[in-house]
Image (tube, rainbow, N blue to C red; front, side, top):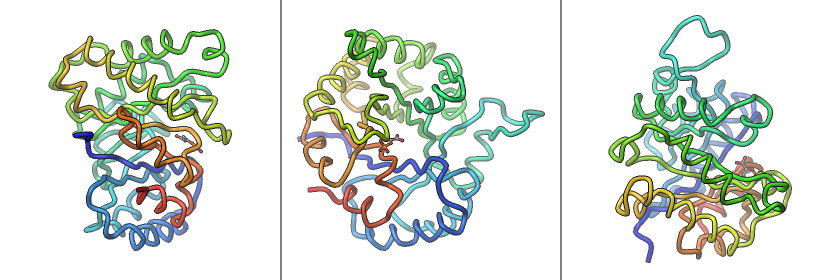
Length: 252
Ligand code: PEP
């Protein structure tokens, strides 16, 4: 029996206008209204955060953003700060997603600054890590993850990280339809938990939620969740339709 409450999180990426996001959120809320034993989060685009958080007030669905900038305010055209996210009703923030690393030159260092900022504003970071196909094929998976975790969590103390969520997202499985097998996911999740134990302590490691992300679907969520170190899913494509995401949220 796992002692960690599962978290099913939907990353809507750059999909949905404000009206579409509100409509999807309303439908999802109706479909998952009875769920109590797991946490649910959706991360709409910035432009829909406030409107979606208004319709999800008094529901069991929390809001997350897809990024955060580390300064409080200032002349940083196009950026969004932690206090802005909080004012829009956010509780979580996805940080270091592989698409941010790949297309927007995020580094472990900027990821570290974003995690710091999220924690400063009381947001729960969903810190994404994962290897590329090439790295897996050259047996670098563990060294890549070690580096991402060490650098991303540099200079934090145990107490800072009590709320932190890690999402293991093998880059080769994101949006490709290729899912890691449950055994592959378990192997990496156990490795990440051991890194947290070594860097911080066993108690933090045993309480930290580690999500799997990469082509999660209603058909594979139960198998993934049956693994001892898989504590939830970060879901892209399959979170866009309320009917599909609700099936993932309500897996048996
Ligand atoms: C993601 O965006 O985090 C993701 C895992 O995408 P998908 O579920 O579409 O692979």
